[in-house]
Amino acid sequence: MPSSLAPLLRDLEIDRPEIVTIEDLDRRRRQLGISLQPGEIARRLRRLGWLLPLRVRGAWEFAPADRGAAIAVGDPFIEVRALAAVRSETFVGIGFESAAFLRGFAAKPPAREVIVLDEGAAVIRALSMFRLVRLTLPREAFDPLRGLPVQTADGLISSISIRPDGFHNWAGLSVWLPTIATQVDTATQSRLLAGRNASAWSRAAYLLGRGGNDVVADRLLARRPPGRGPFYLGPRTNRGRYDAATQVVDTVGLIRHPAIVDEGPVPTAETAESDERTVAPGEGTRPGKPTTDESGVPG
Image (cartoon, rainbow, N blue to C red; front, side, top):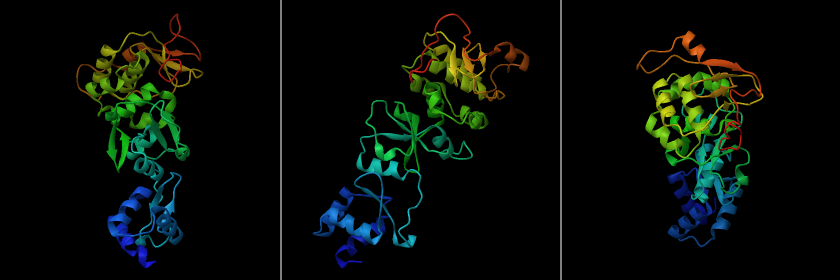
């Protein structure tokens, strides 16, 4: 180890940052009175294996001595952390299946991790390895977890309702939907859906009903803005089941779970079935053009 860098390395070993930026190196070398420029410091530390390259420019992963070698820690979201360190004004959230796994709802992570970027935000090439869903949500749809903004249960319901095309693992959702349905409240969900059209509100109510939270589902329907269905959950090319209460055509086959809130009678299988019917691919449930959702995909 070069003696000129020893104080800076000791500083890094004490702090053990996951990400080191060029600005961080500049700040540390000024505090320690090191004359080398931050770019040269980064080059030397990279050559010695203390800093590991990342796709985000101006940021590196720090490899402390007790790691034993210049080996990456294997954090699937290391590039998201790096971007947050160098471009704090750019919001990148962890969403959909990735959020469900990090929060302990889903049993396994998706094959490709999912991030959420605000609509209209610039393309970030350094994050091209992620499955990107463009969706602008109030920040309360996310809550910090392991140093990352991760969608909450409310955030998951609203995101899937607004951008169902951004979600892929419907079989998995059927398993953990009752878990997140218990954590959703009317006020928060209404704020997250504010300004969205009837299709998003209807899908949110349908998801909560399938998860067993009929109380919040009914309250969302009462607040739903005007709009005529059918509203599709899943590809329109698939055969689906129409739910009369929400006007949602479910082509992904979500399982109906028992009611989880003991308020009023629970519909029996017979009464529930009377409000549903099978819809063939491409079949509408009433005259007129279905509403188009925010993603540009017909309801």
